[in-house]
Length: 156
Image (cartoon, rainbow, N blue to C red; front, side, top):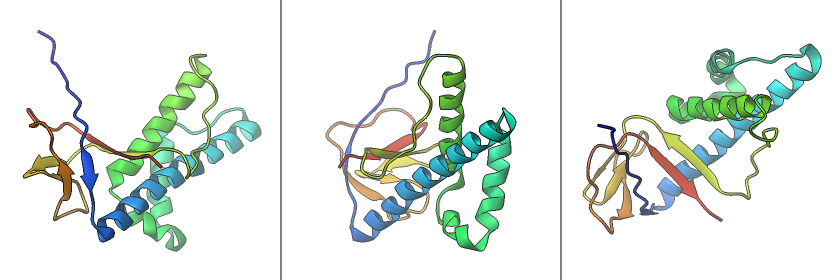
């Protein structure tokens, strides 16, 4: 028997401090995606091939150790790596003829990030890494089952 996965969508009500941390998440994920997309474009133009997800993941770790990019350490590592995974998927789809070339992510468009682990819902609050008090949500229907991952998004 196949497993059934359900998606639940809730509205969040973060306080001011949580809004700032969320904004850092959105910005960091966008920065990582755009930085490594530019790197892939440059490598492909120069050498005819570019790094894959695993090479870029190692580079991300080295990038976080540099002083000018130390702010990336404030963000959950799996969230940044998922951004690289999305870039890898976009690149693969382009070269297989299933999609157009990946575009750079703009600040003005819909932003999102995905948390792959350590996320839960309790007492009308969602708990993700770096949010110990939890973010208040409008739980208009009861959540059933286990949380596999969460995608937090904002629309302008």
